[in-house]
Image (tube, rainbow, N blue to C red):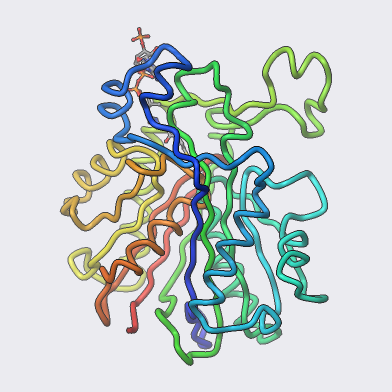
Length: 332
Ligand SMILES: CC(C)(COP(=O)(O)OP(=O)(O)OC[C@H]1O[C@@H](n2cnc3c(N)ncnc32)[C@H](O)[C@@H]1OP(=O)(O)O)[C@@H](O)C(=O)NCCC(=O)NCCS
């Protein structure tokens, strides 16, 4: 990472109020609490209200991160929002968040990199900060995954939930919670057809046909995603450690994408990491796509799980396929 340091000044997250349990799902599709818990570790997930959108959750998380940083929205000079469920194709959800926060004129943009997008945004924000044109960038990951969930497909609908997380990244060290050590991004477009939402874009614009064929819902080959996720996360975590000359044992906390407990256990086993080092919230949240790792980060922070000088590693994977890995040093 280039010379100018990038700090995390504020952290926040938001989960919608309504909770959908595995028992509730038993009444909706042919599944069981036992199957879902054994195969995924998920017990319940939060579901956004019908009139609560990705931008609303993003705004709530952003307000909490700004509160944590003791900053007014006017101090923000750029907003990045990542999601796979933006409010609409355009305008950018980041622009809607800007309006909600009553910030004027700062640049706003959306970034899509599947469930790895939080780390992608962190790297983009760090790069912009290091160019020197910005001082405080709001990085927000928010997903209303239930808006593209096929509630008739038991192989996917049991996995997902809604939520948002936010961070203020800054070149200003005052009150900083943590400093970014490094980020490592990867993608493999050959994996694009194992996790995707086919309908609604230029390839399959909305039509009676796309609706009839349920193309506006998320499609997934779970087994393939599982294998690629475990392999890709393992490679990325080794590579980021080796290029920073850091030993695995020197990382105190791993903050993984919250998709499946079995994926986390497989990564832990393959890399010989004690599973207790992984921060896990998926049993209460399901997979919130880009929002996932940031919500886990915020909750662990608020529970006081990080000590001064602890090294934290974000390890994410998502549709694309994409991988985002970040090292963060806790400062307080
Ligand atoms: C989706 C996932 C939990 C499925 O677990 P799995 O062990 O691979 O299960 P399979 O897909 O092989 O299905 C096993 C059986 O369970 C059945 N099944 C699938 N979903 C079910 C459900 N919700 N309830 C009950 N049975 C279910 C299947 O129909 C299959 O039955 P069959 O053997 O009679 O054909 C797992 O593959 C996974 O987590 N993959 C990664 C997904 C992911 O992380 N996605 C997000 C990426 S960001």
